[in-house]
Image 1 (cartoon, rainbow, N blue to C red):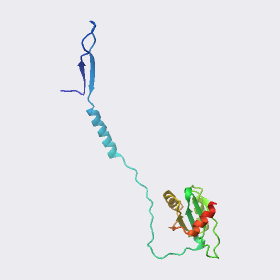
Image 2 (cartoon, one colour):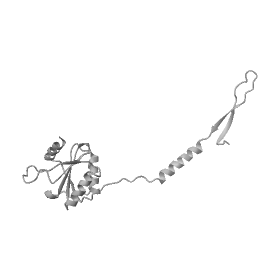
Image 3 (tube, rainbow, N blue to C red):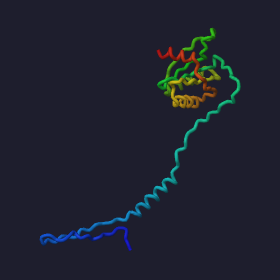
Image 4 (cartoon, helix red, strand yellow):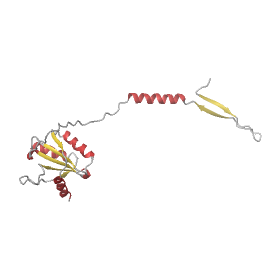
Length: 177
């Protein structure tokens, strides 16, 4: 019968010069129970751990029909630029329309004192605000996620993801100068 730990005597070799040496003893430890315990603990913690649930943002897209015109007074356009910058202006950018005023582009960030405050201030001024979100080629995917989070945080009911126009790019270039 073999025990978990046993001591096995080992000869030290022939005695030299008449001196007697003590026998060196070696130990052998059976690690099988320790490995069993480790796997039991690992299995226990894997089965009892709850994994982090992913957070999702529900986005409901309308049925594709004809375009709905947005009144100039109720529109706010947000352009996502490079370097995680957010540019916005009130109204629509229509340089061919002589009656529409030239938009004043304002640049801000995704910080709580940035685009969020601009959205909340505009919501207080204008009921039924419609936000047009236009990502540029220089913006990142994280910028889109951040602006959709801001729409949710500010409880913005109407917003649309729109392609950026050449007029918007021209306005953006004049702001970067």
